[in-house]
Length: 248
Ligand SMILES: Nc1ncnc2c1ncn2[C@@H]1O[C@H](COP(=O)(O)OP(=O)(O)OP(=O)(O)O)[C@@H](O)[C@H]1O
Ligand SMILES: [Mg+2]
Image 1 (cartoon, rainbow, N blue to C red):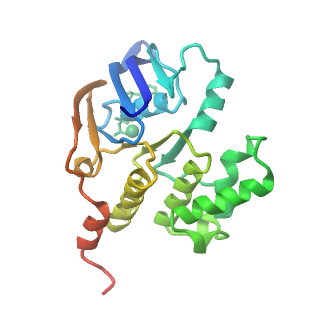
Image 2 (image 1 turned 45 degrees about the vertical axis):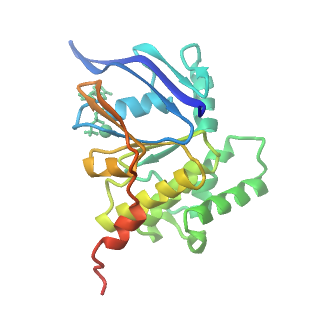
Image 3 (image 1 turned 60 degrees about the vertical axis):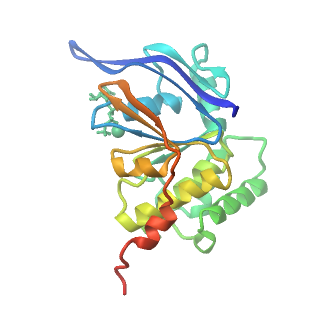
């Protein structure tokens, strides 16, 4: 049995807005093992981002518990959670969230700056290695504004990987990209999962992407509606080859 990386136990998250309470998550439970590639789907407002923010220790639940790599976040204070987040989780967002006018290497070095076990020289070496792993060896010193959307998302993925996190969390990571670039990024995620064994949780509202992951969890109104294992994983690389080429 692969190791349990994530264990979510009856997780609830309420938001109080004025005199109303929004029940964004109403009691969600599941476990995720090392090496899984999980897509999380559901219509707008179903609770996907709320769940991902909890999994990423960016937010705390109203009720329930969450264990990351065996550690319960319930008893942790804010600083301990921030440390856990920095060491164990890599994030990729729809809007890349790169520092503007800053080189790819500098952007990728960022998560390591808070880690005083890593020297400046080691930090740069790791950043370059991570950028090579996402196919950006030839764009190391390009600034964010000098790169395409797909390249910027690759930098964001390299940044998410540089700390060697136990899990990579992506929220609509292909949401801003055209179809071809989306498949390139999806193919990169598949490669990281299948070749390097990275555990990935990929939130998307695009139901077509379920065929490319190993498991699909569907949320509805803050509850798990479906949780399905996919034994016939489609290749994003092959899907990419089949797309019509626009340039020729
Ligand atoms: N900070 C907040 N304050 C109040 N309500 C919130 C907050 N964050 C989310 N909600 C509410 O919680 C519910 C779930 O929101 P969430 O952002 O998780 O949905 P989602 O599935 O990610 O949707 P989308 O596909 O549009 O990104 C929604 O009804 C939303 O309005
Ligand atoms: Mg969302």
